[in-house]
Image (cartoon, rainbow, N blue to C red; front, top):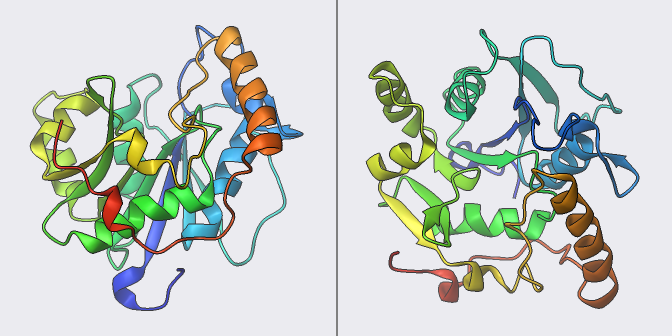
Length: 236
């Protein structure tokens, strides 16, 4: 669903500028499916967007990989270190040109995503013109780092950041959101693991095991699906 019209231009942002304190080593370099975790996550995002922006810390050492001419990857670095995910998100978002209509935002520590699931978030945004974003709602909290946004949300983020807001949960409260319950993503996340993140060595080991099991018993869908009416969810 890449670039078929001006209205469909979509970019992806992958956030990877965290300190990885609980992991004890940089998460972006963790081996996942034979490649660094950052490369793995970027490659899940690339099939559904026209460009990817990686948000990184000022002097963060990042893995490199061969460029995809069909979907370039740009590295954007925070102006100051350790200002939190909202600062990194804003810095990356502000580099994306205005013709872009939709943004897919993903954290580097969500390795159990797949292109079909990401496209479903974008499809739900397209199917609901009266909302600003489509965001999973899980265990009583928004999951804003696995979500689809309209480009005009940038102004809301900028205003909140200028007033001292640093929490992404507060950003969600300021937007018109279409919530998605995890069970409504099951056609594209058959084993229900897309929201499992890796903040600790134990979670990393669990993610590797879940990924291996999912590939053997319920392979991640590779066909990008149309929007599904059953995926709508009316609220937390």
